[in-house]
Length: 78
Image 1: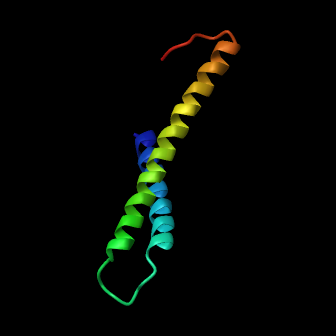
Image 2: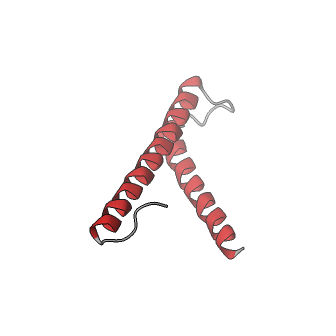
Image 3: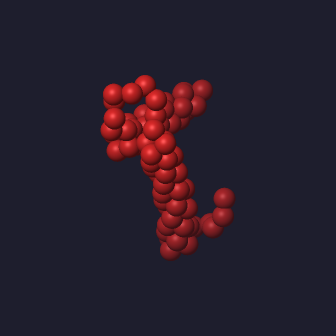
């Protein structure tokens, strides 16, 4: 249960960091209540890029772990 809570807390921290970065990079006009099309597209692109980067890093990390395991003579697989 503690690991589930920690995982959820870590997810929320990452979500907040990405939200702040994308908001800061994309939302520049605070004089209106509505989000402009340009700001919305920028935010969507920012989040999409972050998600793709995270997925790619995860795959590379898995590959690295497998190579280390093979080099150390350990079992390969799940």
